[in-house]
Length: 68
Figure 1 (cartoon, rainbow, N blue to C red):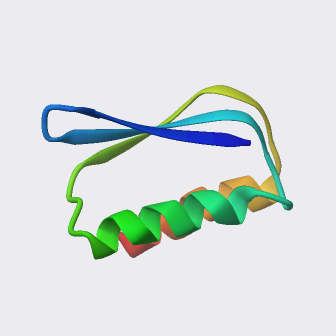
Figure 2 (tube, rainbow, N blue to C red):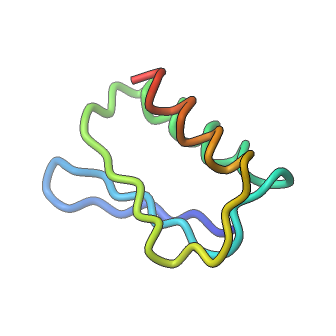
């Protein structure tokens, strides 16, 4: 999984590429937590280029939603 951050105005966009699974979904959680610590208020997680997502990846997304 590869994560890239880009900014469009006040909105941060996190582009997720590849497979999101047990072995790497924690990276997305860590990235979002760091962004929240820096008071980033508006962000989008773009999953357009995700080829595969398992229950750990879905769990990471649910965790992020419940944190914000």
